[in-house]
Length: 156
Length: 335
Ligand code: SF4
Ligand code: SF4
Image 1 (cartoon, helix red, strand yellow):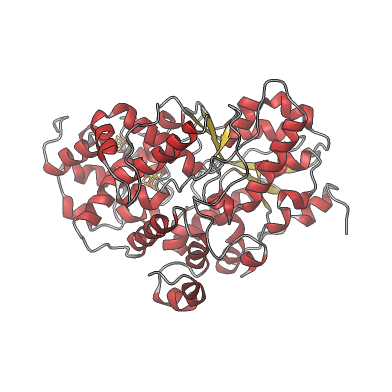
Image 2 (spheres, chains in turn brown, red):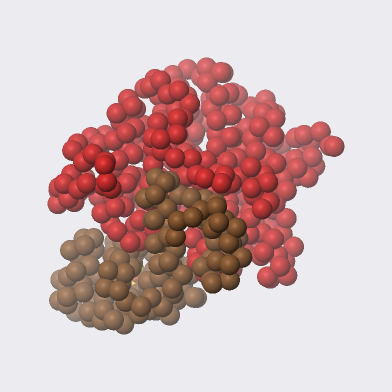
C-alpha cells in the first residue's frame, strides 16, 4: 500500500483536514479503545481501511459515521498520529452535503435543529434540547409528547 | 418538568444581546460560561461564581479572578457545527475570541469542555492553515453582521476552568482558603473526553491519566479513589439521538464508580453531568440497578470546602440528591 493517497476519497479527506488515511497500518488500537465500537457496524479501523481504498458509499452508508461520539480516544491513541475523529467529521459533513440517506436519522436531525436554533438565538435553546433529552430524542412520539415546548417555541 | 421546577431551564434562552453583569476589563481572566451554564448546568455557574468571589475576597497575591463575562458572547457551535460545517465550526469560536480580546482580556476560562475544545481547535486550525484564514476573513456570517475583518491575534489563551483553578490560582491559594476540610469524603474524579484530548490541541501532558482534579480534591481534604473511567466517554449527544447507547455508556461509568465505593463522582463537564445525574433514574429502570450517586461539579466541592452555603452552590438542583451525603458527612446540619 503506497503511503500517499491514491483514491479520490483519500485525497479528499487529506485536502479537507490534512489527515492521510494511508498512514494507517491497521493495528486496530483505535477500535480497541472506542467506547461506542460495540454499536458500530464498521469499526474505526475498518473505516480507515475502506477510506484507503476509496470505498465511499460503503463508508457513508454505515452507522459508524453517525454514531461516533467524537470522544477523541482514537485520535489520541493512534500510533500513526491520524486524527480519526477529524476524519469522521469530514465523512459526516460529506454525507450531509451529498444528501446520502443517513442510516441513523436522528443524528443529522439533531445537528440541523441545533444549528437552526443557534442561528436564531445565538445560543443553544436548552429547553428544546432538554425536551429531546428527556423524551429520548427525535422519534415522532417525542415530537408529540414534547408538544408543550413546541407551542412555546413557534419556529420549526 | 422537574428541571424547570428546579430553576434549571428558562422558557427562552438568554441571548447574546442580554446585558451581563457590568464588565470592567481588569486584565484578569475572562469567563465564557457557554450555553449550558446559563441553564441546565446553572449549579456549575453558581458555584464557580461563588468560589471566585471567595478567592478574590481572600485576595490571593497576584491572582485576579473576577471572571467577568464578556458582553454578547454567542454559542461556540458545539457538535452540530463541527459535524455539519467545518467553516462555521471555526468562525463561531473565533468571533467569541475576537470579542473577548476586544474587551481587553488575554486569557479566558471556559468551564465547559466542549466550548473549550471548539475554541482551541479553531485557534489551532487558523494558525496552521492560511487558506482557512483567508476563507474566514472573506466570509459574512449571517445577515447584518460585520465581516470578520480582523482575526483574533491568536495570542489569547483559552483555558479550561480546571486549569485556571489549579494552575493560575494554584493549589496553595486554594488550600489557604479551605475552612471546612472534606475529611472522610471518598470521591472519584471524572474528567470526560475533551478536557485532555486530543493532546495536540489541549496541550495536556497526562492525557490518559490526568491528575489535576485528583490533586485538587485531595487538597480539599477528600479522598480521591483510583478507578478506570476517568476519561471514558459518557455518550455526549448520543443521549439525545440514540438514548440506549448513551445509557449503556453512562452506566459503565456509574458501575465502576460504585465498584470502587465512591460516594460521589466529581465532574468538570455539563454534558457529563447531565448524562450521569439526570439519566441515573432511567439507567436504574432500564438495567435494574440502584444507583444513587451524587454527581458534583468540582467547583461545588471547592465551594463546600470553602464553607459556602450548599444552596448557594446549587446543591439543591441535582436530580440525584446530594443532601443525604452532605448530611452524612456532617457538611450540613441534619434536618
Ligand atoms: S490506531 Fe491508527 S494506525 Fe492503528 S488502526 Fe487505528 S487509525 Fe490505523
Ligand atoms: S472519536 Fe469516535 S471513533 Fe474515535 S473512539 Fe471516540 S467514538 Fe470511537
